[in-house]
Amino acid sequence: MTDPEWTQKFQITTRNLKHGDSWRLEFDENLLDNGQQPGWKKCIVNTGARFRCTKCSRGWSSNKVMVVCHMQLRNGKGIVKVRPSHQKCKECSEAPMEKPSIPSDNIFILLKNLVEKIRIKCYNEDLGRNKKHFRSFDGNKPHEPSHCEACMKGFCPRNRS
Ligand SMILES: [Zn+2]
Ligand SMILES: [Zn+2]
Image (cartoon, rainbow, N blue to C red; front, side, top):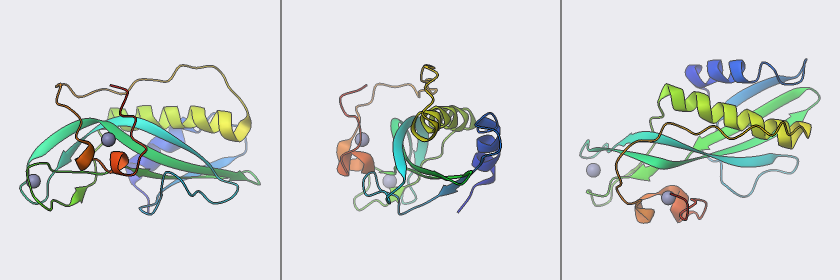
């Protein structure tokens, strides 16, 4: 599965990777934090996004959306599979897990951070660039581990604010 907005931004951010290598981005709903295939590298990129409950249509935002990324470079062709973590409404019982809606500027920032990881993990290049911080949503609502898929599966950095 692909998304035109992500694909276009990914093309821009991977433009300056090693000349001649082509990179492609895909969404993979089955991607897990652990259990990558042999030869694949992984990273997790944190971003901020909004959610909407499909049951009661309540909206909320979160700064703990974890995008799991698996990447592989082989014969000049790179592929990245991504899956942003889901969350569910805390007001509804048996609420479904919802996909985040990540704003454009945050998609760009998370892809830039992802490309820095590709440089380090697939090209052994560490340019020492600082991680760019995504635009956070305001509010000091506590994070709800029982409504966060990343927490349930153990890859949400609970100790970081
Ligand atoms: Zn709800
Ligand atoms: Zn969490």
